[in-house]
Amino acid sequence: MSKDWLKIWVLLPFLFIFVGYQQVYNKHNIEPVDVVIESGFASAHIARKLAASNVIHAAWKFKLLVRLTGKAGALKVGQYHFEGELSLWDVLKKIERGDVMHFQVTVPEGLRTQDVLLLLAEKTATEKKLWYLAAEALLHDEEREGRLLPETYTYFKPVNAKNILAQMIVAQQRVLASIRSELVASGSLNTEKLRIIASIIEKETSVDAERPLVSAAIRNRLEKGMPLQMDPTVIYGIWRRDGTFSGDIRRKDLASDTPWNTYTRRGLPPTPICNPGAASLRAAATPADVSYLYFVADGTGGHAFASTFEEHQANVKAWVNIERKRK
Image 1 (cartoon, rainbow, N blue to C red):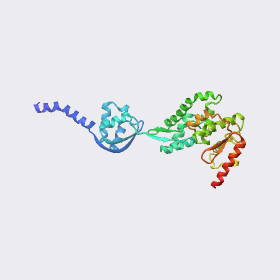
Image 2: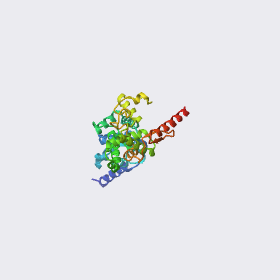
Image 3: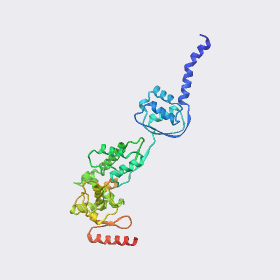
Image 4: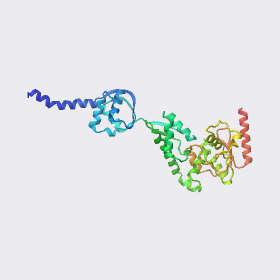
């Protein structure tokens, strides 16, 4: 073997290392692009997807790098954003870290569980069926109304409906745990009754300062054996029975008996009527120390409260006058 060939053979491994280093660590510009890596796909499929999105130049290079580094089991699912100067190594490490895009969805207080599921399906651009199946899997045969805490939640893509709903259930459990001492102090008020009362409070007022006052009115009426006569319970009962409600409550609706109608039946409804927020849950556990039995809208977005029927009648008259002037 000539000296020239000997030199080539000696230098060849270094040449391979140099070329390999360039292929792995040389950076190239990536135009902004999002790539979703789904569960169950092998590194070869991921490599082809990255190549098709122009994140890498050749799928085989990424596949080989994954194999040589033993990272096949470390690649994490999710939606990734790639942009700017990145090397093949940078791309691999980003996916290994699980540096995925974060998304948020806000669920407002006071929605029925069915409406929460529909909202989540819409906001996350996923099928409604996925959310219904997730709710069924998590809550089984339990009452599903009032079990989810309205809040802003962070999620990742691909969307895991079961994971998001589980977050909402656990979040409510944390709130309930934080007010456990108040629950003990309230004696017979168990968790389910708390949810029911909180759901009524949520539908009756959106003013935080009023929540303990509405809670007190509910407590006081229950203690006196008076019917609660809360319009939102009537509306919910009709919706639960008929699957719909016109939107305007009428006298005949108040007389239309359902298990949730607190005009025709005394005591609490059998289930919550919506998913209450943390403020309403806390108010249900800690009603104000007042003697209020009645409340009516006051024309400012809040309510006028009264301890006697005569005071309440005066407040109702004031409200009727306000409504007449508006019309």
